[in-house]
Image (cartoon, rainbow, N blue to C red):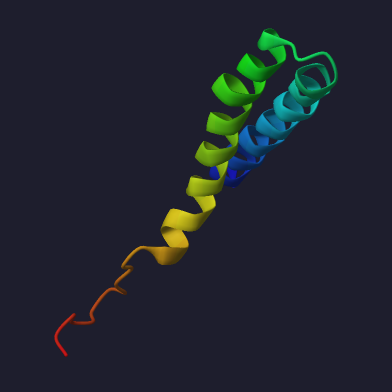
Amino acid sequence: MSAVLLRVALLAAGMGAVEIGLGGALVESSLAGWALVLLVGVPLIVAGSAGFIVPLLGDQQQKGTSSDA
């Protein structure tokens, strides 16, 4: 349960950083806004998303089964 909460927190922090940074980046052409989006927000979103996607796409074997075809 704590792993899921961590992933959700990473996603929320990343989306928050992107939302805060995009305002300044697009309206004022702020370099700090783009830095916040690209250096903080996007990596947090990718890290949070990967936490959910990797277990879904990974090769999970159940105990007692063989991987032979």
